Amino acid sequence: RSFISAVHSALEADHYSHTCTMKTVSAALFFALIGTAAAAESCPDELPGKVELNGAGLAFHYGILENDQALCGKLVSDTEVWVGFAAQPEGKKQMIDANAVIALPEANTVQQYTLTAKSAVGIVPTDSQTLTDTTVTQEDGTTVATFKQPLSDNGLTLTSNNVYLMAKGTSNNLGYHAGRGFVSLDFETNVISSSTGSTEAPLTTGSTEAPMTTGATESGTTPATEAPMTTGATESGTTPATEAPPTPTPPPSSASLQKIGSVLLGGSLLLIATLTI
Image (cartoon, rainbow, N blue to C red):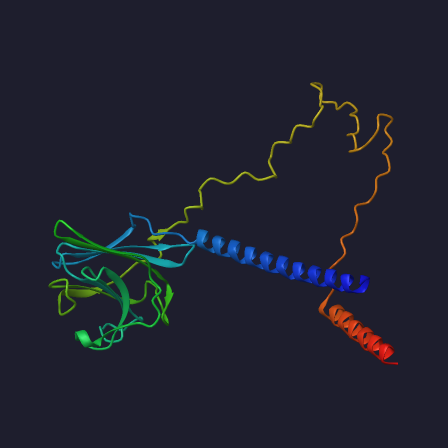
C-alpha cells in the first residue's frame, strides 16, 4: 500500500510540474504579445509631407515613421469619390503592375490591389493585406482616406526613388478616374520621429555630480558608521543559527515514472507467481 501511495504521489507531482510549465509558457507568450503591440506606433493626424495633382483637387499627405519603418498616408479629395495611391519601382512610370492602395467609401474599405490592366477587371486585391490605421470618411463634399503601410511590402521597397501615382474617381463606384498623375515623395526630409524619442537626454546613473554619502559631516569628513544590523542578529551582535529552508524535491522525469511502472508490474507478477505456487 505504501508503494502504491508513493507512485500516486509521484504522478501527481509530475502532473503539477507540467501544469506549472504550461502556465509559465502561456504567461511568457502573453507578455511578449503585449510588448509587441505596445511597440507599434500609430500615424499622427498631422503629416509633414504633401504633394498635389494640379487641377485635380487631390492631395496626398505623408510621413515616414522612423521606428516602425512605415509610410503614413492620407489622401484628401475635394469631391466625394473613390481615391487611390500606387507605387512602382524606380523608372517604371506606368499604371500596369503597380502596387495600389484604394479607398472605397461605400464599402468603407482601404485595401491593397495589384493593377494588371487599365480597367476595373484588372484591379485585383493582393493576397497579403498589410495596411493598418485605415479609415475612409466623407464629409461636406470631401473624401479623406488614411493608411499605414510597411516600407518593405509585397515584394516592393518604398523609397524616395520610386515612381508614385495618385488617382480619384468620378463617383464612389470604382471605375475610370477623373484625375490621375505621377508624383515624387521625399522620404528623407519628411520623417516622423518616435514619440518615445524625446530630445531631452534621459537621466543616467553616471551623473556628473557626486552622490551625497550618508552620514557625511559639513566639514566633508565622514564619521565612522555602525555596520547595518543583520536580520536575525541579537543585541550582542551574534547571529543565531537558523535552519536552512528545505530544498524542494524536483518532480520525477518520464524515465523515472517508466521505472516505477516497471517495478510495479514486476511486483505484481511476482505476487501472482507466489500465490500460484
